[in-house]
Amino acid sequence: MDIRLLPTQQLKVTPKQIAANYILQLSSMELQDVINQELEENPALDLEEAPVCPLCGGELTGRVCMRCFGTGVKGGQTSYTMDNEPLEGTNLMLRDEDDEEFDPIARAEAEMTLGEYLSWHVRVLVAKRLQPVAEQIIGDLNDAGYLVEDLAGIASEAGVTIEDAEQALRAIQSIEPWGLGARDTRECLLIQMDRLEEIGEEVPPHARTIVGSHLRELGEHKFGDIAQALHVSREEVQAAWEYVKTNLTPYPAHAFAQGPAGELGGERSGLRPDVIIAKNEDGEFEVEVIESRRFSLRVNPVYRELVGKLQAARGAAVAAPEMNDQERQHIREYVTRAKFFIDNINQRRQTIGRITQVIVECQRDFLEKGIQQLRPLTRAEVGERIGMHESTVSRATAGKFVLLPSGQVVPFSLFFTASLGVKDVIKNIISAEDTGRPFSDQEIVEKLREDHGIRLARRTVAKYREELQILPARLRKQT
Image (tube, rainbow, N blue to C red):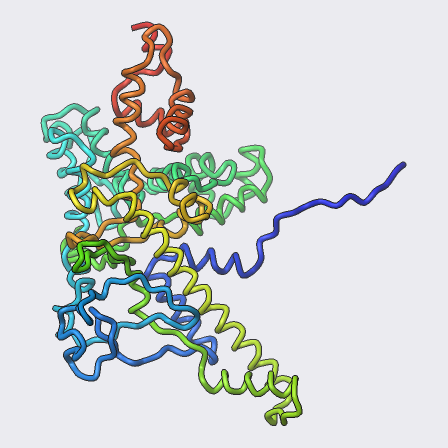
């Protein structure tokens, strides 16, 4: 037997990459929790407490910023600039309540309920004749975001067919945060998996079947029973459970405020933008990642000085600080951890900023003229422009929101809402086909990619075709 050692290449993900990806995918609220936890656990990590102006970012010495006087202008420039500071530059916005009237972020956070947010999208996503039934569906969502009324009853009351009501409901279910409009937890989770697959995220094998048919057993951790029923391994069931627990939520409306009786949108939402897109005095769009003004992290000066002395003592005849080996190890570990954490925070900010900058370049007409000018844009296209994989773009934008120049707060997913423009492209492709040989869904996928640079899964094309009420190829041929 001939045994040989052959060199092979294997892609390994480093702990730093794992941590950076974790930080990247956090929402603004989740990031704040992670930062607070890290501040508690790591004495070498500091939060700078100097109050800053919420508009221009300058240091505040009183209640009113002496740099911009509440106008947001400094030296003829607006405050909405792309922040590319290196290691230690993010700012926590500390302000009195009275200062909020100057803050566009505070105003945006107070201006939209979930009902208003969904209505804004519905006016774009559904035909005008279906907007009344869509509004009725929105009004029947409970505090978790589920539809609590029977859809047939809603359709009857609105004077439309059940098919029309289902079309309006599908439009609502396509809006981020995904899962809104589900009838139960099972449907809520399945909707989220559908949307994640559409944006290129990989769903573990059997996860959809497990959620669809064995959700109760999954919640009770009866992994062995599920594995036996589906003829799969227990490890595969556990992997599906970890995926559901980590990536999905049964409460899609948790980011929005509830009224005193628990009704959805009964009071103003705490929806918080992660990025500002604004126009400067020259009429150009500029991008600011809000984290740059919300917190400023640094290595504790005492720890920085001690580790500097330790490094100097190793390379020169300098007396080392008096401490034992355990204390030296403690200082080195915590300083390294602090720098590592700050670096990941800054990498997150720069990644989100670069992605937003490309979106601004691609969606300039939308920002100027409104939603009807939204062009078909994929995460793969954005990733290609900045040298990132589309999954990185997906992590960086999922669950995050943008404050537009108009003052509206919208999810990043709006810029990638393929259904707004791609449906028209699909309709044109089918209209131009040879009636003797209609295109299959897979052929439409290839034409979208080759002729228009739009990458969609076949099942997504099939879904859009059905929403356009166009028959599949075999039936179009017969007609």
